[in-house]
Image (cartoon, rainbow, N blue to C red; front, top):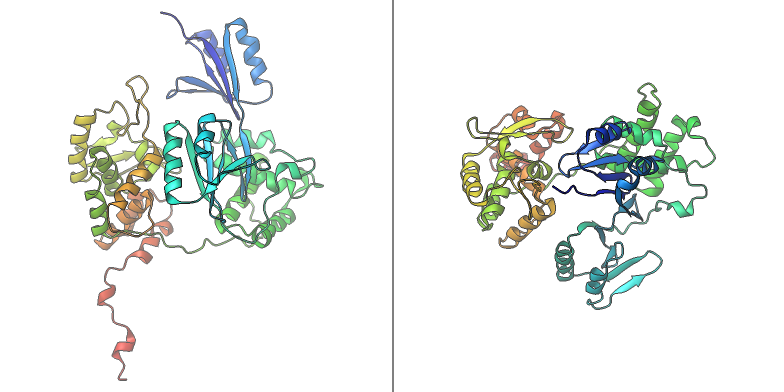
Length: 455
């Protein structure tokens, strides 16, 4: 049997190595720090640290068939710097009612944008824009999916605040120390946390250009925190994350003692999540005609799942004997069990018999036995949106609203808060207590003291 050629693909901070199985090669690759085998993609992931590409090229020699590089596109976006690869599109709904798109060269997508009225190319920001309308938005989303690209959608807020300076505007810009990134990966922080922490720490160290990183301390942390609040006007969650990114350096990278920095750490804004009534959930499920789509929404609501937990579910995680669903490595890398509804089990059995998924409970298009593919999170959001449009519900909801509704309905039906906490996988009971503020059951039995006055 002919062996596949050896190839290297460089994507941002990663080197993807595709190579036939060979014990000597495996031994060499494992000798490279932080290399790991990606069993889902059937390739090796190696950090794109200085010297690693040259090391691989020197070892592989003439056996290396191809080496390609997919450069990341760096786009300053208010609170963060967004890095895109060539397969991603960042679409921003601006405060001036336009859709602004950032992406690498893609002739077909450019042709689509030119078909819209009043399209513009901005050479300064290297972005395309068209007038905003729901129709235009849906059309572009549809075409991006057809091109096999990933869409990142954001909405711009019209606020009078200081923008984060881009790297180009900061003389002698200091990159995040490699030891910081090493430690994040060593402690198995999720890719999303790494993407958040690195630019936050870079913003901190570049806010004090004349101060050595080793000399920074409580004074700089306090000053930077005040700057985020008073000038950048970032959200409390953003400020909290920035402080955590800074603390990570001093406490985890440098091994300092856990320390409280005397800054006014923000309290999260008390924003109650939107929830649906039981009747509204029923209406949405009835409006979901496709068998697979209905099974997806029923499973999420019946078990209180996060969208990431749903797409990671495997067939073996459904325990019909104990009527439980096993959630492996959910948020915070914790395992837990949650409910398996009898109605959900009924539709899942019909769905599995008809669709015959290979490995994951819900698989995407093109999934095969030898290479099963997860269902897309964005597709699930689209399913809910389409079902919602077939109802008379006017609430602005997301798939996560089904999880909030699950918890609220359990509480209204008398389930102890401790059980709800366990089912949802909340680390702190305070997180679960928010549902006590949402429920309105029993409000009609409470009389205002005004009604008892003789007036």
